[in-house]
Length: 252
Image 1 (cartoon, rainbow, N blue to C red):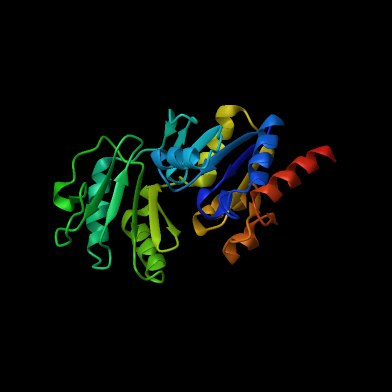
Image 2: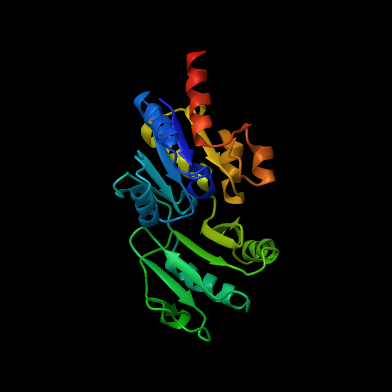
């Protein structure tokens, strides 16, 4: 039994949704293998995307590896942070005038937070009115200039040390518990299922996929950034090509 864990945005959906992709995914699972999504998105988003695209998943790994869930959304495990850190982090981010929002969530709840001088959309809260949460699993934000993102990431590392792991995703920054990333989440799921690391296959396209691309037998899809293509074991056009390459390898 193998595990295929793929990013969603720009990866499993790369190349659209032709019938051949669904057929390949069906053959993968019929061969006794597991398929699931690993993403910076939260569990509710992954459930919605799975439903919208008629994807049959065996697992969901959300919040860049911090949350592992069953295909119905039931939580297997969460890597959590104390909520007091969320307040400090949001305050730190909002000191930069280019930072105009942040989302803070766990598997049950999500709030979109804005500085006090920014108008609210329905459902948003201002920083000083952020309700108390039991814990958080991920905080996300974005900046208008992609060149600012690495600078902010370094400032977060300097301010919070190993407490947090900030990761770049284009103009966005996803921030989870220190030591957590997609690779760790996949490894934890594999242990839960009793699957060897040698039987883990991953696919991605962007910077926050780097750890899993480096750590496992990996594929970059056609639209991946150059750094991911350089890290990956293989580069393929899309998930369909990946699956048949893996299945044919089993026959050799």
